[in-house]
Every structure is written in C-alpha cells, then in structure tokens.
Amino acid sequence: MSKQHRLVLVNYLNTLPLLAGLRAHLDQEVDLVLAHPADCAKTFFSGEANIGLIPVGALIHEANWHQVSQYGIGCDGPVATVCLFGHSPIEAWDRVYLDYQSRTSVLLARLLLNDYWKIHPLVQAAQPGFETEIKGTTGGLIIGDRAIEARETYPYCYDLGSAWKSFTGHPFVFAIWASREPVETVFEAALDQAFEEGLEQIPRIATSEQSRYPNFDLSYYYRRNIRYRLDPPLLHGMDHFFELARKLD
Image (tube, rainbow, N blue to C red; front, side):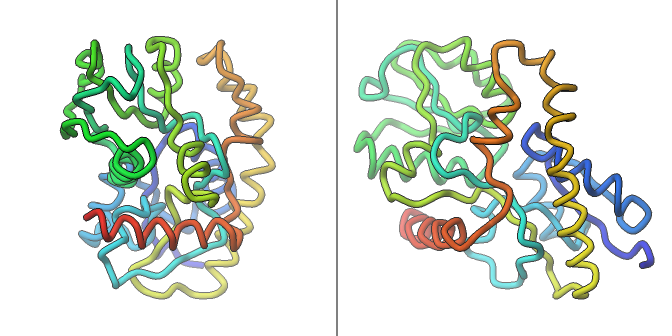
C-alpha cells in the first residue's frame, strides 16, 4: 500500500494501544497527526486528515462521513477519565465549567445534568486552567489523562460513563474511526489488524505508563473501563446518544 492516508487521533492513555498498533504495522502506509479530541474533528472536517478517531459529538449533525474499522473508544459503565468534579455534592452546584477538549463529553455532561441528575446550574465553556475555578458550589468536567490526577484533588467525582449506564442502560461510545470517503476494504482490514495487535500490547503499555499514575491501576483501566471493540450494544448506545443529543442541541 502507498502512503495515501492521513490519520488524526488523540494522544491519551486510552488511545495508546491503538497508536501502538498503527506505529508497529502501518507506519510506512499512513501519516499520523495527534490532537485534542475537539481538534481531531476540526482537522478531519477541514480536510487536513481523511481518517480520524472522531468524538461522536462532532458527527451528530454531519452527513458526509463513513465508519471505518470495528474499533473505537467506548465504555460499559464507569470510564474513569470523563468525570464531573467538585468540592461539594453535585446537587449543590450552581455553576459547571465544561472541558474545552471534547464536544462529546460536554454534550453528555449537559444531557446528564438536565435529565439524570435533574439540576440546572449555569454551564460555562471552559478555557485552559479552568480547574482552579472548581471550588465551593462550582463543579467542572475534566476529561482524559488530567481526570486521573483530578481524582486525587476533588472529594466529589461523578463518572459520566457510569451515570449514562444508570440513566439509559446502554454502553457509551466516545469516539469512532471515521473517513470522509469510503476507504478500500484491504486498508480497513489492515487497520483492524493493527488495532487488534495493538490491544495485545496493553500489558506492556500499562506497565510502562504505571509509574506516572501511582494511585491509579492502569491495567484495570485498560481491561475494565475502556471498550475498544464496538459491538452492536455499543453502537446501539451511540445511536441512542445521537437521538438525545440532537434534541438537546
């Protein structure tokens, strides 16, 4: 295969197995771009990359995309790295800062605040450094690797994967591999093989990264919190989120 695909994805702990598979098996066939989730969508829809691990919230109102691969990022219960944090219980909050790094998590948080917790604080788009504003009756949505550190900072933590499961009974999909045009069957098969072999590297990745997070069990995180294979229940959960999020928007 010639080097004809440019792929964009986040460089979070939860994507390291996928990234490892790409670098080990398709490094000569693809260009890789690393970005925050929100920037992944911008890079993808601007045409700077033709395939991306795209947050599903960015796809809700878009028609010109195709799912690529059986893999993605999801959860079936607690996800551990997408959480609302605070110094007071959630029912006391009158303001919530929403992480600037992911539209999907912002939509999910807004939906759950309204329909699951049934509270209506002022929700505010956050800027870098917003974590210092989480105090008193102000909560905040923190995602990704920063959420691991936040778990030790704030006494109240509300996991959005767990809340979604309690609210709907469904698993949740945060991001899927998408293309702007259909891709060749042989390339999609090569992607799936790379991701499958990347997942086999999880024990090595967990061991290598564990020292950075001494109070967080990365092996458990990879094995139990994150779902990589997007089976029918996960895709059904994604469709349900699309339905609810379109009404919210």
